Amino acid sequence: MARRKTGNVLSEDVDEARKQIMVAAERVFQRYGVAKTTMDDIGREAGVSRPTVYRYFGDRDTLISALIERRSRMLFVKARKFLLDQETFADQLVEGLIFLVDRGRKDPLVRILVSPEHMQMAEPLVGSSGLAARLTAEMWEPVIDRAVERGEVRPDLDKQKMAEWIALVQFILVGRLDFDRPDDPVHREMLRDFVLPAFLPSAVPAAERA
Image 1 (cartoon, helix red, strand yellow):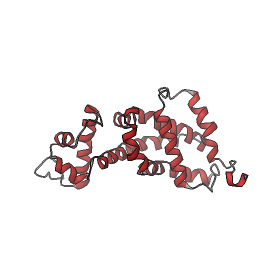
Image 2: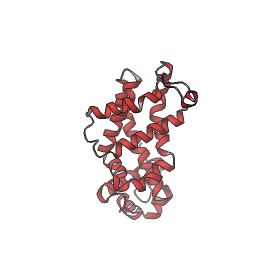
Image 3: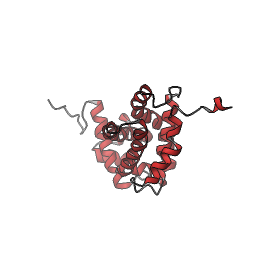
Image 4: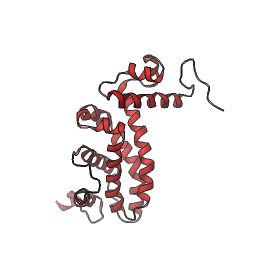
């Protein structure tokens, strides 16, 4: 049975209503850009008032963060299927990072949020808040856990710090203006030489080398 609608156009189901507002926000962000879009614009697109939008999302940053989570999880579904086709953790990490960055850059909303002119605005949303690390952990922890069981990853590494490091690498790759060719072997060489070794059992912690 279809959900009943309220006096406006939103569903009475809170989660569904939030989704409706986010879908409307996505359309407006793509039309006007993130910086120029107001909560009034989003309300008009959703067919509700600005106070109604604020009732579901306390402020604009909260709405944008929710959108990042929504778009990221949509991408994760595809990424997990892709990772299952990779036989080793080395391939999962290298090919997975390239897959996520390439698809993220092609996503119309994610591209707006991470484009150079919006990085200053996006940083407190996905960086300082810890959102990027949390989403990265959600994506990668199951992969890392299985790799540890297979002996492909150092068991002494802190998972939260691993997620923070992978998130940072993703941001670096996303921001590279030359990352328009995901098939470029230079990207893979860089990841295998400078990122992958930190996870391998053969890596020796700096404290032990001192």
